[in-house]
Image (cartoon, rainbow, N blue to C red):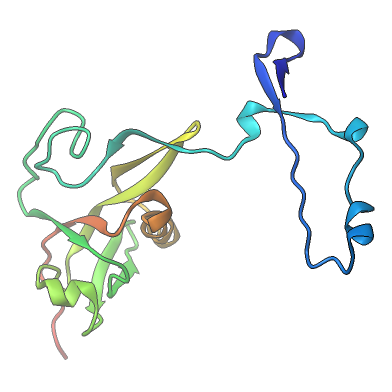
Length: 180
C-alpha cells in the first residue's frame, strides 16, 4: 500500500517485482519469492516514468515548444536546416580546430536523398534529447566545437523511445571537396 515516508519525504509506494522464468513446478516458484515480512518500500522517484518536458524542437521557424524558445528565428547567413530520418548517411570528419565537416554521403542514405546536404558543409547545430529530472526535451544544440563522439551520441539520442523519428541538423554551406 501507500504510506507516509520517514522524515517527511512524502508518499512512498511498496514495490514488488517478481520474475518467474519457466519454473518447473509451483513449489519451485513459491520457494523463490520473498515472504511479505522482507518486502521493502521504494521511494516513488525510483519508478521509471518519463514525461515530455517543455521543448520538442522540430524547426527554427516553428513556434515554441516546437521551435526556438523565443519564437521563430532566422538562421544565420549561409546556414540551413534539414530534418533527416536515421540512418543519416553522412560521413563526418573532425576538424583540427573542432567541429565536424561533411566529407562524404552514402548514395542510398537520407542525406543524399534529401539533396540538401553537400560535401564540405560544416555541422553547426544538432538536435539531441536531454533529460531534465524525470522529463525529457529535444533541443537544438550549437555543436560547432563538439568532438565526433559527442555528435554521434546526440544523433543516437534522437530515437523512438523519445518519439523522435528524425534528426534535425543545422549546417553551414561549405566550399565542397575538390575531386582529385
